[in-house]
Length: 332
Image (cartoon, rainbow, N blue to C red):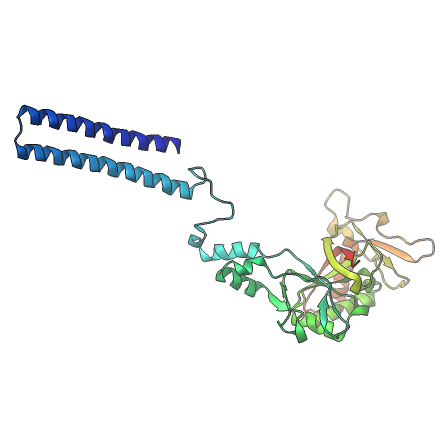
């Protein structure tokens, strides 16, 4: 930019010098009587034309400098980080992808039925701020999300919910028919429930059947809760974090028929060639009273997949299983 300004100053200086030279020459010739009046006028016209040409060139350079300063941050003034003046020139599919990336990360919805027999959430989320950006952004939020958990399962007094990304956490012993209907109306694809709902093969299968009765459910999430069990109405903020394959899930289980350990298990398919199959002897144990079972998430997930494969028909919708740790803040 400094070089551009120097060029403009040089052009302006040239204009001034040429005007001065031509003026002196015209005056000298006029006083010597070497030129007629018409010749003098012609010379003055030439002087004017030269001046206008050089000034036009200087103006062009000035406009070029301003244009570059507006389009490049390294030319001239810095652009605010919140502006994107040429965004509208991008292809529509790229603009749509940008708007989609502004949508909220997965959130945890904890619905329950309050004292007025209405569906409520332990934590209320605001609609995405991008809805107010422009019509194009608003249309993306309408396509990817919907207002759910409202009055009588309608949009009225509802909350913006992304069925493919957001997670609904439920406890079966605290869930009413209305809550279940609200989950269905929201077209929920990701449902989370506690590990204690998977204490036996029969209970695992029952959870799969229940999840498949939700028309849009694709993922069943098994959660561990490192904190003490709290009543759902005392929760005002919940977060879920993925379990690693080697993270443990604790099961309080006396059902010997629930073969978590898989006596017929063949882990060769998990062996990566170094002799380690993904499990070790501590993946499964019982306390002195035989009351606790501890398994890694990788082994429990494999067992759930086997139950699903064995007990569901081949044409039935298959669920994806995921293990997550649930962290909650209790209401004060």
